[in-house]
Amino acid sequence: MRFLVRADRDMTVVFEPTAEEVSLKPGETLTVEWFAERADGMVSLEEGDLVVSAPSGGYTRVWGSDGAEIYVGPDSGGDAR
Image (tube, rainbow, N blue to C red; front, side):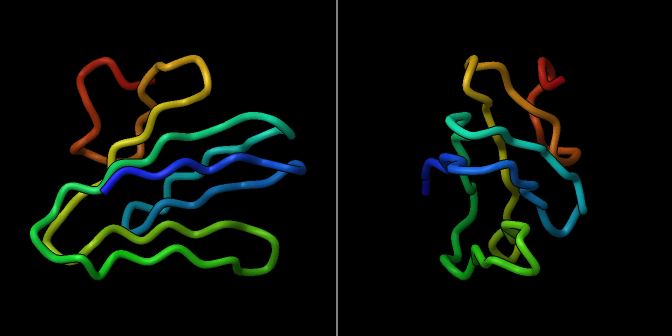
């Protein structure tokens, strides 16, 4: 599954289970892709932070507004920053 996160204010996106954090400014986006056979991933808003939890047995990859991959865990691509 692939989805887009677009910030309308300063915000932090937290990726679980790795607890990696990405800060966004208004207008910035993240493209998030889940790789898994199960569809039980979750996105929630907790105390102003967006929390993206990977599906069971799966992993998450993320790309910033500039198209560069962002490191959010060991399954991020080799070019992740």
